[in-house]
Length: 589
Ligand code: ADP
Image 1 (cartoon, rainbow, N blue to C red):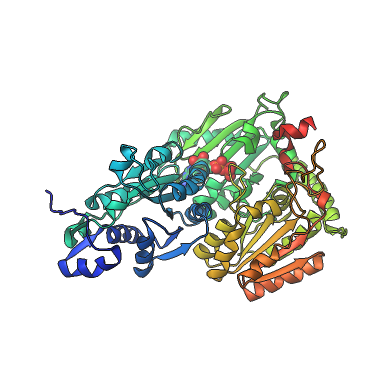
Image 2 (cartoon, rainbow, N blue to C red; image 1 turned 180 degrees about the vertical axis):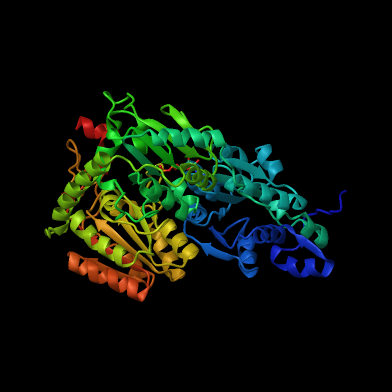
């Protein structure tokens, strides 16, 4: 049955609402908005322009919150982390070709990190694009998005908008979440159809992320392996944080008594100060463990692919002898690097609940020699760290500055915490404890820079909480212009730049006879805080831990957008932070 009359409207988009109301017609703009609202979408992150300017205006008019950025990459990162934090797809809206391309990095990032996100881009006229006749911002966007998105769709007719958005939502959040591309050509928006038929064509997605129950025999296999372990270890990944089943994860850890390691964005699922947390003994537990339970964590480079010297293997490629249980929603994840003896495929909530039921009331605690050895290691490393943190050198070190951040986060455990950089990332991750789930959001699976300000905006918007960001000066540069966005929306964001004047370290000399500065250094003593002042926020320049503490406390008290430029020693960093080995030039030098 074709009850639609799709035709391009002749009047400018802004006048359609009235015209459409009079003729009981609804246009493509409104159908997109209504479909998103019907599915519980509340926030749109984007950059307006042709052909989605009126869409952004009308979205705002219709009650969606439209957060407008200065660059699509930041808007995309914001959408991706909104997806991680809420479990609903984060929406990024961009213009065609260049805006679309700017958003693609974030789309790929969402897919790589398993964050649900939908990149919606306006696009040029299909007929002209396909014949390559040179349209304004001509580009075959769907084809370009496909290889890096979990799924990609295009909607050509108003009556298909409901289906297009439903498919995008399902693809983003079901199974392993990821980034989805939705191509909306300019001609779609002014198309009109009869209003009642239009409304009827929209789909409210039922059960967008269905539970996936693990097989009973998979659970039995996993528990049998765990029961026989002498040195068991649990590794919690950001999949476990995303699943939002915090009480069951905690019960699994505490009921079994097994020591656990949180991956970076799983920090705080249980407080980092928990007695079973083995973070401070990481290099001891990985090679020593005999059975490892992975919960929403992949054996990728962040875990040395589950083999090699990190895991006690004889060579950089050899297996360390650990036996693995892996809980993951993707059935293809197991065996990606080493043998997984007990794959448990399903959603983490269902898998952990089934494991808890199977463990029974009397699960044997791990041998005391194992937990005792870990406790001993931890105590030694914590004491060593305390010594370093207590030092008060001038200029400040990364550590003496982060000692302050550590105290501030402890006093404000529900603040969102954003972190990116090289040394600024690595030092912060190990020094600043997290106390609550999904508070720490950072560079993720790729270890990228540029997420900073986009994450700050989304963290503030999606949670309504205070945001604290610790940024390397290099990392901040990728998204620094979004300080204007932070000020425009008056968000409670306190950015601390650990400023050592360059990438890795600011005292790098140019190689050879070059007279230009080294490619790795920036303007010395740059006054980043003035950027925040330029937009009406608060800028503070600090050189001591006391000054930093006062500035952070004031930022949190006032809730005003604040940028603290914290000067740290130029030579305090190392090449690529802790991944020097991945940088071949560093080895050659
Ligand atoms: P980390 O970087 O913290 O180690 P990864 O991103 O490598 O974490 O791993 C996250 C894993 O969690 C992915 O393999 C993904 O398939 C899985 N995952 C995400 N959400 C769920 C869920 N709800 N249930 C089960 N597994 C999930």
